[in-house]
Length: 61
Image (cartoon, rainbow, N blue to C red):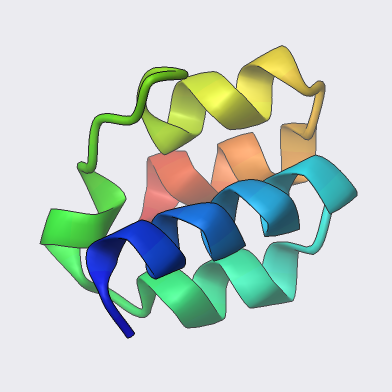
């Protein structure tokens, strides 16, 4: 899966509040975790969507 596809899937998982999918897609990959999107970092995306559980997990990854 290329970076663009991974990015789309992570954003979709964050929007829907699917913590397990976000963790699966990031899977300890620091490059994916630190990816900067047009919407900011994944932490920014999760926070702007009010996904507190995902925010907490991204901080602890």
